[in-house]
Length: 489
Image (tube, rainbow, N blue to C red):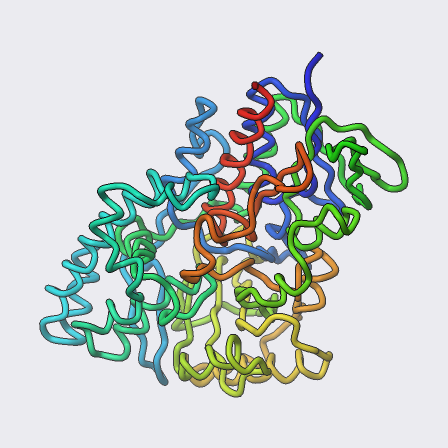
């Protein structure tokens, strides 16, 4: 008789795991508490406008290709990709911005124009970053995080200085121009940590940026979700939406026996939770929880975020599909996220204008915009806070891009800390999971396999390998392989 595996949540890691487990011959059922699948990768549709509410960046295309190839497919079987040109634009002051090309030599030229001699250093930096990318993405990030020995090899030993060094030291060793420094330090924000706390080995994110480029799936990130769901269903996965898991049941021997879903018991041979790890453990009796509240409180979490989804009644000028506003002090904003949590005085922010690339996002001659301000997790918020920061963003946007916009706002919807908590059961309302600091990397992250409950597993951004969509796909694969290995004994 085939084993039944129940998965909690339907984010990228859960979707990936469901595909692998169904392919391995198990009966797989996914329970999603919300009405739509995809976890944080939701879309908002209003008045002819469309917004990606969660992830908007498509980086590391090789990870997506590797995932679909495991099933004899490719991303092009499910969605159409376009490489963005420019990849993104970074503002530093009024009408002062740098465009990052999708061509490596053009990027080197921009660096050289900005700081004489920097192109040589950039090429050397990227040579190391590419080597680290090949080591990390082809090997290290697919390790299950069970033992420190997973990180020990000839290739990692020769890179020990990059494990204990930091991105900040590495970047600033030879490149001094503050604009270029910000551009090189920015990708680690995807890892949810400060550059001065992120191991230099993670410069592989710079290769993901400059070497592999920034892409856009036509129709938005929801098309990636739809592709994965279609693949899962073709493999036999069953999805149940509006299905809230209230408890993980454990029998007298310490083995999973099932779930309580909307008040009813469903028997399980294995449970895999792709929901927030902290929340998932609250579904267990106290004695079966691996990590205490004190443990979770002591972790360094990636930021939460204040997001605005805005419809404009005209096309905007002087912006790109992805536009970063670094006209404020990065380090001060970081202090207000990690060290002395508070509402930021002068925050950096990110804007996405997908309708520049994809006309499905907005009506003709109009613009869809998503704005994101990174925030400290668990901030107390009010509607007045949201209004104040919306005004701040519009003022800065108008000033930096030298255009009048306030009267062109048709509507603005917002999403913040308390929404992350209610929609996704996110601990402290974090948006990106646990930061990838040295003490929260690989085997030092919460375990995929429960140490206290047999046949209970976890996947997603709070376990290995870490935050981001590509790592989520990898996390799902790791979890599924551990399950299959355990069940085959």
